[in-house]
Image 1 (cartoon, rainbow, N blue to C red):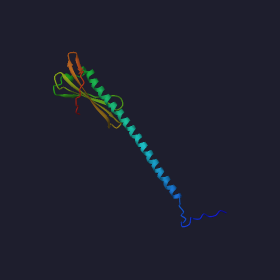
Image 2: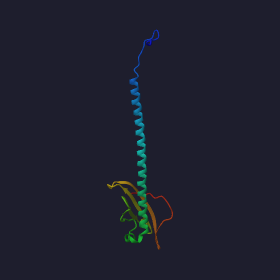
Image 3: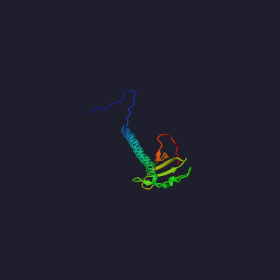
Image 4: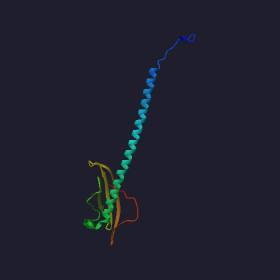
Length: 160
């Protein structure tokens, strides 16, 4: 048989129960791993939402550009534009560009020979809630050959 271990002279023998400590360390490690995993999933989810919202904004901007180009390209098919008084505006019929993407053009006549063509592009979900919208404006001038957009680029604040 083996001899029992004796404490050093002047010291008491202390027994430490390490099983409870191992359980506490394991639970703490699992909590930390769970928090790291949840943080990773949250970051991935936010990245996915940001990407999806960027796509929606791009679709709305494309629809707005298409609306302005359609009005200027088909100017002669809108007889109400020639009769538009200075300082007045008219909202033209909008159109749908595929699934849930639409545009709504408006023409404002600030002077005799100048027009502001505004087009609002909208990307909506299946219930009709707006996911993204963009507003594009083009200044156009009337010439004997027809209506042409201004070649100079400048910033104009378009209010809704």
